[in-house]
Image (tube, rainbow, N blue to C red):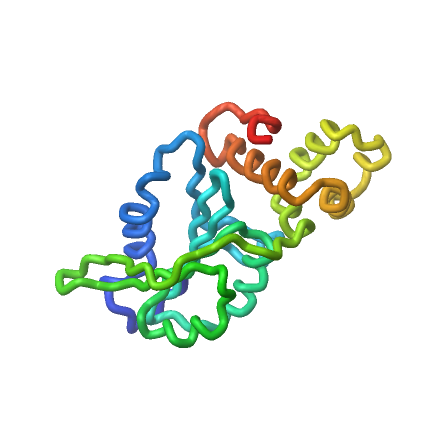
Amino acid sequence: MKRTSGEARAVRDRDVRQALRRKVLREHIGDSNTLVLDELGLRHGACRVDIAVVNSYLHGYEIKSDADTLERLPNQISVYSAVLDRATLVVGRKHIEKVKAVIPEWWGIKVVSVGPRGGIDFENYRPLSMNPEIDPLALAELLWRPEALRILQELGAPPAILRKPRSSLYRYLAEVLKLDKLRRFIRQCLKARERWRGHSPLSLGADL
């Protein structure tokens, strides 16, 4: 979320993120089966989700304060809707009418409110639901090449496939795997990345 010089101090990006973690995501923080990650890149960095929660779902939170513009929102909607199981827009009250007209019905909406002492809270404005149209190729692109190769080896892919460029590996996975199974593999790989969280990699089959 970008901040302009005219934004009130009480609604800085850092403050909204901290409040979101403390009040909305508290149950997930410290959960060994959940990864809470800032700035998850999608479509090879075309967009970054402000906060991603990875457990039984891939859930992204996008923050738009009253001081933000909505110029990037259409592209973010397109990219997020190709990949995420669930999406929540955390938005300043100034933008609520505009965003209601453009975000998909399955996106949830939380409205940021600021109390007289500067405390930040969140109003559940619209409930979320599951994404009905995930793009398997866009989802597969979340994988690092070694992860894609490991999955393909487990699937018994021909050696010729394993030598192909990364883009071909993604296409192959998107074509041969059912969406639910691909989603599970992706979540397991994200949660198992050692540089993101200090624990031993999870078995790829553990959540299947």
